[in-house]
Amino acid sequence: MEHLDLNPQVTASLKKANIKSVEDILAYSVVDLQRVAHLSIPDVQHLQKAAAVRLQRDKNVITALQLYMDKASFPSQHQKLSLGCSLLNNFLRGGIPIIGITELAGESSAGKTQIALQLCLSVQYSAEYGGLGAGAVYICTEDSFPSKRLQQLIKFQHKLRTDVPADVIRSIHFGDSIYIEHMADIDTLTDCITKKLPILFRRSPVRLIVIDSIAALFRCEFTAKDAALKAKHLQSLGAKLHHLSTIFTAPVFCINQVTDTMKDADTALNLMGYVNAEDYVRFGGLRQ
Image (cartoon, rainbow, N blue to C red; front, side, top):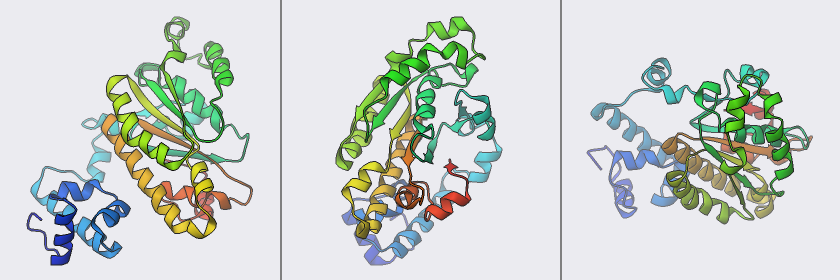
């Protein structure tokens, strides 16, 4: 494996899994690499560290700090998608990142769907007005798509977006650029993310994915005793969404509904790297 200092058993497992390069190794998440190559977590961690060191030494790569500091050379890493609200934009320092996953969680009727719908409209504005000049995909896993509420938002865009000239708002056919999917189980959702969305992104100007909600299907298909397995599946799904976001420079916005005790959110928070609900509360409830 490109002269990596690895245990022969690890090398044999990689060959059996048809993983031939350091790029292949780093393209997998820890969970996926463990599953595909049948390796232990310590072996996977050592393998990824060795691959990263090798890649940095042999290839023209940069560090995360360099990426953060050199904004002029990597504009997409610093561009934000506006939420269409100055207060929320100020809170998020301009909006949500156009690469990566943003998760919004809260109790029922807290306004989560309202923000998601507004994002589906905001993304259609040009960059001059905080958008990406593209459409959106809205994936529903619980309730039907709130089309009536969307039409109300479209109707009042001239009042909600006073920063945009009226003629610009009238020129955008908002309803024509929002693609709606309803998912009933995890397999269907995974198939949509890995197969249907890449085709849609290549054929249509779409730059936003909304999932409402990300944890609902996992609550239905897994019991409390399956918490560890549920977390692995959720992390794997998160890795696929990150991959899709990176390839197409498209933000992913995930909604989660939680209860007063926050216990239902524990596994959903694994998508964003939280340990549990208490960790989530300490960091403020909205994480990018």
